[in-house]
Image 1 (tube, rainbow, N blue to C red):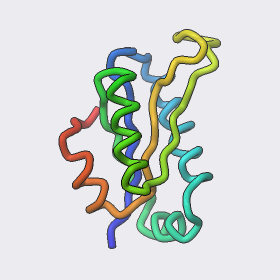
Image 2: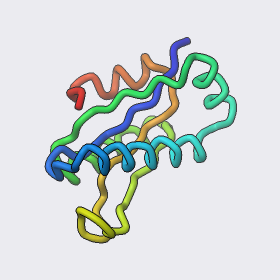
Image 3: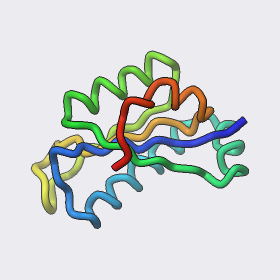
Image 4: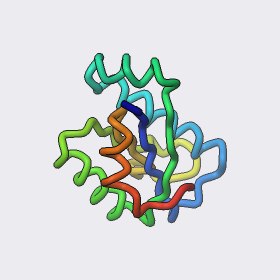
Length: 114
C-alpha cells in the first residue's frame, strides 16, 4: 500500500516562501505526532511522501480538514503566533495523514498543487 501526507496551504495569505515552508513543516510534524504509530512506520518505510496543495482561504481549509476528520484521518491545523507576517491566530495551513494514498486521492483530487 502506498502512503503519503497532504499539506494544505492557504493561497489567499500569499505567504513568503520561507514562512510557507516553516508553516508546512509545523503541520507535517504535528500531524505525525498525532498519528497512529503503525501508520507512521509504514509511511516512513515508503519515504515519507508529502504533497503540498493549495486551498483558497480559511473557510476552505476548515472545510477540507473537516472532510478528512469525517473519514477518520489524522489532521493538524496550524495557527500562527503572529510574530512575523500574519496576525496572531491566523490559521495558515493543515496536514492530513499520513494515510493510504488512495484514500487521500479520492478525497482531495479536486485540489491543485501549490
